[in-house]
Picture 1 (cartoon, rainbow, N blue to C red):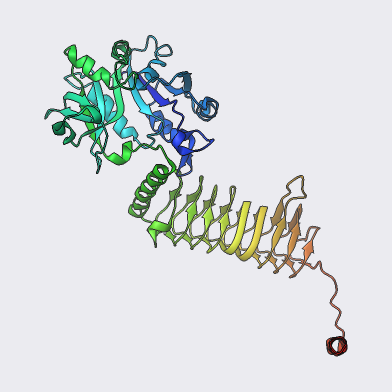
Picture 2 (picture 1 turned 180 degrees about the vertical axis):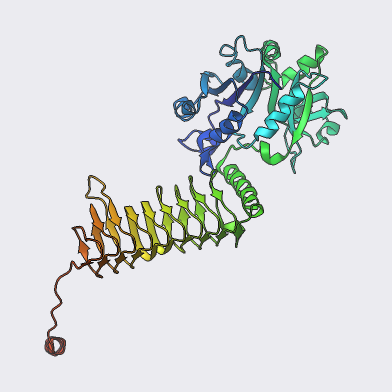
Amino acid sequence: MTSPIAAVILAAGKGTRMKSDLHKVLHPIAGRPMLLHLIDSVAALDPARTIVVVGAGREQVEKAVHPHGAETVEQVEQLGTGHAVRQAEAPLAGCEGDVLILYGDVPLVSTATMRRMLERLHGPDAPAAVVLGFRPADPAAYGRVIADGQGHIIKMVEFKDATPDERAETLCNSGLMAVRAADLFALLAKVTNDNAAGEYYLPDIVMLAAAEGHPSAVIETLAYEVTGVNSRGELAALEAEWQQARRIRAMADGATLVAPETVFFSHDTRVGRDVVIEPNVVFGPGVEIADRVDIHAFSHLEGAIVMSGASVGPYARLRPGSVLEQGSKVGNFVEMKKAVLGPGAKASHLTYLGDAKVGAGANIGAGTITCNYDGFLKYGTEIGHGAFIGSNSALVAPVRIGDGAIVAAGSVVTKDVEANALGIARAKQDVKPGWARRFREIMSAKKADKAGK
């Protein structure tokens, strides 16, 4: 397959059933907008052009896709799928390659399936078009594809126009196609809107080509790949399918998921071997987990790197920029942001580390916080190798705790503590013998006097 490739992605619909100010195709699955899932899969084919047909909410779509190298063309009036594809005719003028026609709200079609479509287009019988078909559990009102034993399309028919025998066919039309550019726009020019909806339908090109003695072909894929999203309910259902497939892959790759149905991955989560993930763990985008890591229950990780042998949680939150180096540990109710925990270092509970670098083997006591923000700017904290930070300490950045230093519990540290020194920053304790007993006697007498009046 050596022909140049262009992709035309239809994304002009309003998506009113989503009931959202956010464009339908920008609603996320696994932390990434649907449309960008599709563009990423197309990019693996190294297309010469990727053109997104936009309409309502075009500004949102353009902002999302332009950084990824996609172009946009506007469909001012929504007059059907055939009309939408024709909006790409001018940008693709002179294109001698193949065109993939995809839908922005059908986000999970794989690169491999796209490649199969293109390869079939260049089969020995040179079909006019290749239609991607599927067999859903409930064919419902999908258009049907009637094909012979070699996959040549005899007829494509909308459900409402199908006979009982045709409705009995389980092979359905996903709407996705591969067509040679030279054929596509010539056929689209012949499509009419002589139908109940008064629209120009893309699938009509299949029967137009057949009438000219140039039949098309169908190949099949799983229904999961061509599931479309038109409502929040459908979005949630497709998210659930994606997550289930990702959990299975994680376990096949050597991770243990104690309660798989409670673990949620992002589109780019990387998980190593012999990783144990306990229940109710959520991965946001940008997480890399190395081998032999334990992630305990109810932890949330985003934009974080966890190196081999480290331990996270339970109830930990790793925010973007967090790095746990080999053998380090964060425990329950610990939050990190733009912080590095060195090899073997520990923050076992009730701690906030923000804009901080913690050296190897350091111990961060319970209730410690790095005070990294003054209301205007952020500042860094450095904690040296082998340092010990006592419980309930506040390290007011910018500040450095040297190697081997100890900060006494309850300290508010505003100045650097040199290596191997003890830093104490708290008021001197004053003990008054008998004061508590005298206080209780006085107050009890006042209370009794008040009650007697």
